[in-house]
Length: 312
Image 1 (tube, one colour):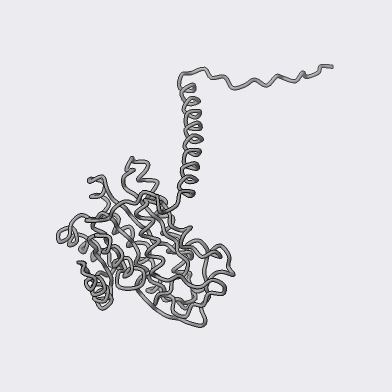
Image 2: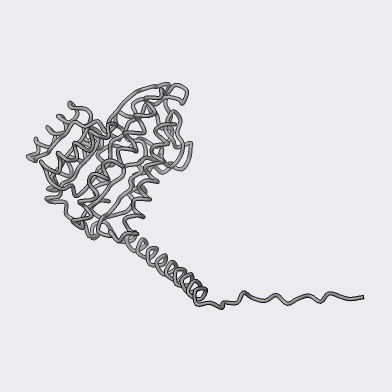
């Protein structure tokens, strides 16, 4: 009778130079990951503890800042506040009347502003308007993708055309505007892209299957864009993601928050500009409602089926 003796397990032998190089690369990447992780954690902690009053703030004086959805709400507040900082403000909106009111608000304070009626759901119109801005105003230094639309209906009540419009305005327009203005930012070595998302892009929201889905998409778009910029060494092109709680604008007439009050456009605009001037990658922690991660804290529609197109 023969007995089978257990065989000793042998470790994998590294025999070739290519295997050695592979192991070295893995070790190097692991160490680099750990070092960079520690660095960014410490950096974030440092800037969190440093009071805003002594934090370095970049100047926007003379910069061309383009705000989509500038015909009202947060967009109008951004235009006025940016003009006060010396920026050359450009506003886009589908509403001519809204643009006129925004321009009047800026001009009344003694500043200049350029406005363009643009349908952000029309790709060719976006590219054409971008060329006009470059020719008439100059290179865009800061792009704020603020425009948004919401229909406030349940999925089965949403028309196919409404769904398509929401996607074009809320997310596809971001692709078109960034593709139009990013190349010149890269060539000049200076630029800033601001993506206005929403708390509805972090959790599903009633009567917002179209709106929430597009806002989820804006978060993914922005984070991927940020990664691409860093991977290609464009560290002087900054990107800021903003995911505000519900804002007291015409877009959400009829919305009744259960616990937390809606945010005011003035506050959201001020917070966004502070984040831009600090080159913060995200302003979400400052403009999200405290109950943003809870469905109890989400806003609800009281039987309102309002169709609006304008500023987030």
